[in-house]
Image (cartoon, rainbow, N blue to C red; front, side, top):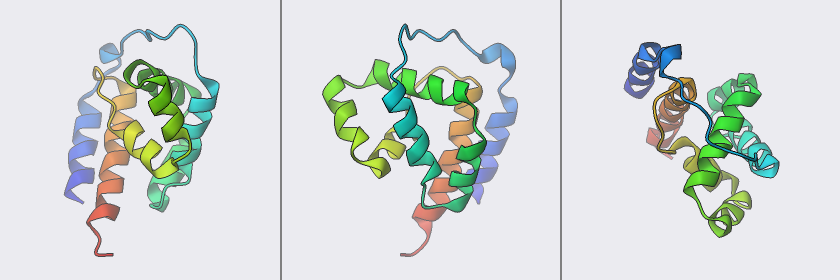
Length: 118
């Protein structure tokens, strides 16, 4: 719960002025769909429900960041492993923008699931 509160406060502090231009020239559509499917299929129903409400620009931004961060081989390996793909997507380093606010909220939700005794 403390993770969710922290993420919510950080998300509220981000303004539209913090958004930056997208450096991607071409979008990897397969990666975008795989990231979307991984988030929508998350174990935590809160994560999967929120992922269903996120728009195309969120998934475009996230897949763009991933193509700039990972090699082609690493991305191919992640495409076949939805839990690892979700983990990689939620830990992308990037300048602060609205997508980061959503990632922080998703991370907090996932952290509460990870903390539950299993």
